[in-house]
Length: 490
Image (tube, rainbow, N blue to C red; front, side, top):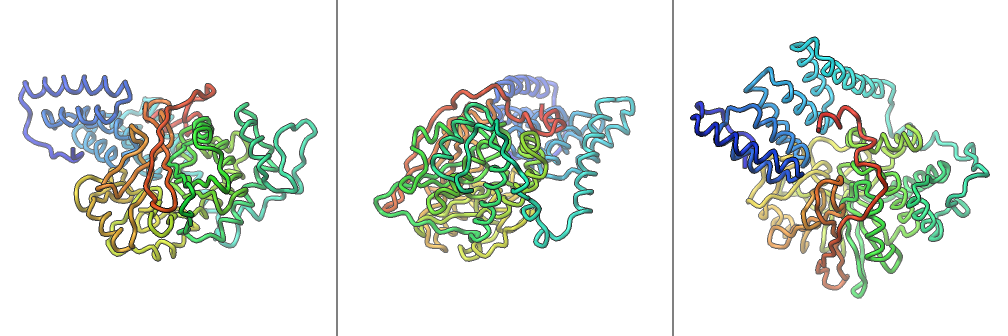
């Protein structure tokens, strides 16, 4: 259903009453976190009463919950066009702008509310909080220099960091990650304890050094008789990550894995997830792979909790170092020259080749368009051709786009992640476009299964394993997220 219906003639009283009934039904589905059904019903209500600002604002928040930021932005703007005094619509639009890293536009919305409602203390507070973010970003830009000349890694002095006598956690052996270290680390994390900062920094520095020497597109060779596993988004759900290893075995030379981006944000155990994964990367560099996701970026980490979590558990300097390391994560992997794996999806242009992906200069924050952006952000759609992205970034691509890309690059199919799926996975585009999502009961609210894919090197036929969420300590998702954003999305 399109999110861009035109304003039409006034509805009849009968239509208005029918729309109100649909809205109430949609609200109930929204309360149950069934956002897809809520959007469907809000859309039906809008067809009955297309001049209701409330309906657009309600559909906007449902789209925000599904990370359809582009649709959420369009709906909030439509609500404002219908009712310029509707405060909630400005809040919705501000949340969509913030989700897209457009903090100045969010600030403009808050500023308008404070102008028309000068005595609204809540509006003043949100304006003030958003203004702090805008000023902080401006300050960071003002003091920054060329990132390729000066970087955080060079300023870290490991020798100055002492290991206290009372520290009883896992320790690197001769400065190296060992299997014993990783096993101890996972158990330590299960007890909600913290790795010593000296070892945490060492892991980050070593991972950065390794990743800097990798291409943007990594080729993976899987022998005919060997198993290979692909996992999707983890999003800081550490205890579900542990369950994957319980179900499918720990990573090893004989049990290789590829984790396909979005290791962090949302879930409040992102630090535990990323240090576990980075430790395995150092332990098995040729049998453990990690792709960059759209959440391994500064704007997402600012809003969705990772930056706050790292700063809380360690330091803001370490949060800056993570940004540097994420810039070097590969953007895609190609298995046996036949299966391409990326976090988001395909491209707005028809002529993209594997060589083009390999040649992307990735050491930066993703641009708003082009190959790098689309690898991290794009989504498949059931209809042919391409559409504007529901997320407001990247594009949506149909089965014909997938078919043409595979044919041009002599590939069998693509695997991507990036979207919650009720069954943990989805097979689309005549079996040629597979989505895998590995965070069950996403954000403790979505009720979805998680999944991972296994295949052997000979036929590369995907096999799906699904699983439910496991219990975790009582720390809610988004516990470290920006407080203003948390409120806006309520």
